[in-house]
Length: 291
Image 1 (tube, helix red, strand yellow):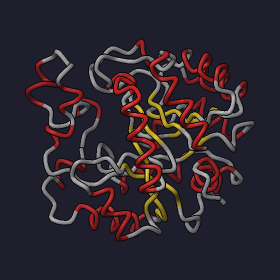
Image 2 (cartoon, helix red, strand yellow):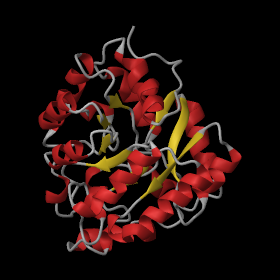
Image 3 (cartoon, one colour):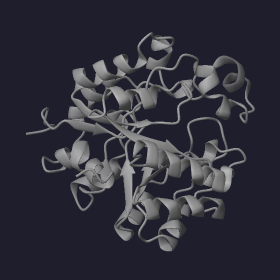
Image 4 (cartoon, helix red, strand yellow):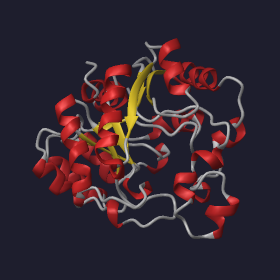
């Protein structure tokens, strides 16, 4: 059977073309030290991606329309988007197409209770169904198991929403220790009711990620920022055996990958037939509380 084409995929990492990429990623480049990141790159991980869709789409007159057309073309029914974008595209997209976009918040644990208050306001205003955090991109960096993170985890449990957290070696040239996968173990021990979804691969600790997913019911893995041909084999094998309910589709459009590349490579991923609908849709809907 292979990959179905009529599932209506849910993309748990979707964005809109940016008017000024350097400004958008300044929160990263302000703490990088190499000349390429600071002076040459528009996108801090350009060295990893041959073609960055956002560069070609920069300055688009209708960024929401661009993303929506790509969704329609490649079978994406819904996309998880951020509502805190200063451009206002997230809020406007939700207003114009509430059936296509799912609101998510972003958080920096350095903001303390002020950040928690912002999350609550966005939950009440937009009905956010998740919160995203990038530990290596915080300044100063805050590790996955740092106690500054704990109010955020506690609020996610209270609100009944998952946290999507980058784990593994970060793409930008930033220090990586704060995102070591082993740190997740302490978090899941202290917050057994938390739904924790990893982003951006968990490499080179994918075997450890699988062990922790076996151990902790609330721990999941999303495939963001990886072209399907590079999905870690540990993750594919786990999905095909005991982890069919734990692996969630996430793309990277328009930040680093085109939907055309993602969806033309996707049928070659070796998922078993029963895994595909869960991976593409139902796992995400369940985790986001939309099932």
